[in-house]
Length: 231
Image 1: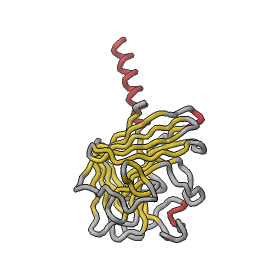
Image 2: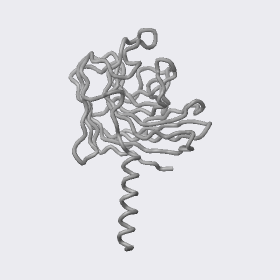
Image 3: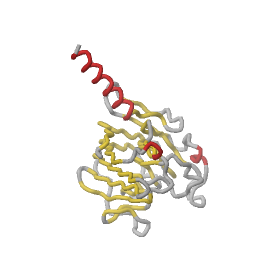
Image 4: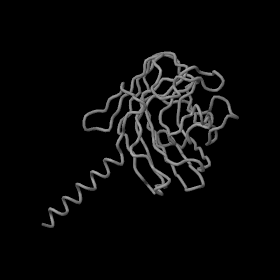
């Protein structure tokens, strides 16, 4: 009887863990796949194919780009402020970017998102890691330089390394205070971003391809994807 109860407890714990780390299609994304029984994901985006989110077909930043391309997944369920689901999480994966041309104006690797429409709330998500036109890493608030992202620097000082490369991201959400996200590339600290948490009612993680002003097709793979709570 004791073994049966332990088995049921383990099954319940496993089911809860799987639900907490479920990845589902974002905005109708369908050109992606997951390897059978392994946390490995592949996303392919064709040049000129507009993404499925509401704001993907709208101009941004005074026409700096006319539309966005997208194939992404997001973590379900999201973490909600009204359920006091504050804390700290770590996402990691080994990433490979396959494209036969120069980078897009911006192409995202992973995002921390609040679920809002960036066309109507121009502040954007709390944080993201992306590749810019100069093949250097950038964040939601500009290129990374000296440990932070800022619009006050040039194209950035950290070039995307020979691939594949490992990404580790830690995000901390402190109630009515801040959302802080730090990034490491191949074990070396890249930089962080910190924003005011007021106004955010939920958070979740997104990964896959989300890009603007592209120059060719792209395939992006993520191996050994992990998402866990660490605080």
